[in-house]
Image 1 (cartoon, rainbow, N blue to C red):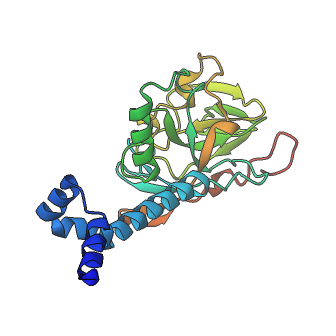
Image 2: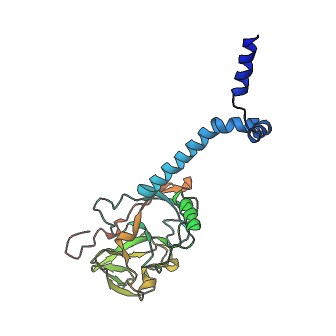
Image 3: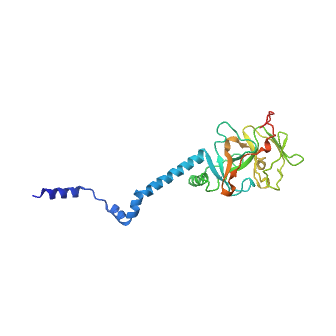
Length: 257
């Protein structure tokens, strides 16, 4: 009796055989099957980790912001991608006069609305967070002209805006623009900002919401961050910074801001 042959038969019959579907897939796509098990899986995992890292960085530290309009020309042009510093006001500091800030205009510039389609909102938010698409229609970029307690008036006899009685020369204004064609005389409530675009004749800003609830004031807690740097295109790579135009302005209490 050939016991060795019997053992061989039993061993081969006991081994699990791949199912028909698996055999078919492997036979038809042997190269693809191998790649998914090897370098393609690693590349996909690495790509996913990179996206997660960029999203975390964008959410907590610095976010690219695509400029969608000419309201801040010549400081910021349409298509510029600015890097928004989300930590600028995270440790007790607050926006200062002259800062260029990005903020959520819901409740001040636009009405509060529901989230709409959650899937579409998530896709748009992902693209905006990576600086690939335009920001949400409720996000704005403007320059801070008045902070809480400031008395801001337009305009003096020379057409300049006055803050707490001090006339301000604004070198960042678009050539040919006046500080404002709309007269105003407001006191900025505590915890809010009065913001204007640098291209005053093409900017929808705090002046356009004087008659709305809130009077065009932007709550400080709606500020997303400070625009610090133009990161793209490379030919416009430069610091945005603030402005020393307000250096002589005194705070309502008498000190300099």
